Image 1 (cartoon, rainbow, N blue to C red):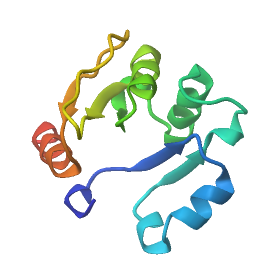
Image 2: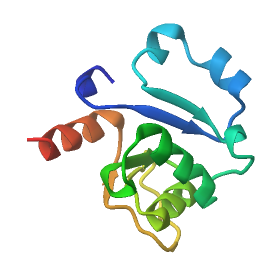
Image 3: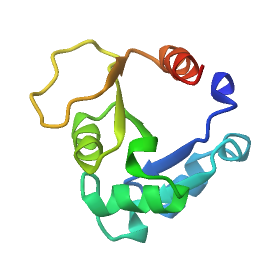
Image 4: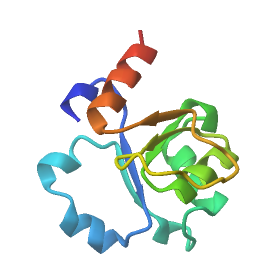
Length: 121
């Protein structure tokens, strides 16, 4: 995450606010502009309401948000909503045939940071 210091970061989780509170150390929490639980909209990813929440809280149109996940169903929902999508594919296993394919596939966070840095030049 240190490599992405100039990038606005947020967490959008299917976890509860309490889980996010205890599971995210304070020094890491401060790197994120928003830490959002789907409890705020009473729906789970891949519901469009979840992605709408993130866009509203970040005050950005969907096309300006890069949604990053290792979960293909979450990335498919995000792509269908209009987010740009990066899939972190740590295993290199065959991927499911889902609508809304990722715009970028990386194998770890370091590769993601390099790609984001290159895109912002």
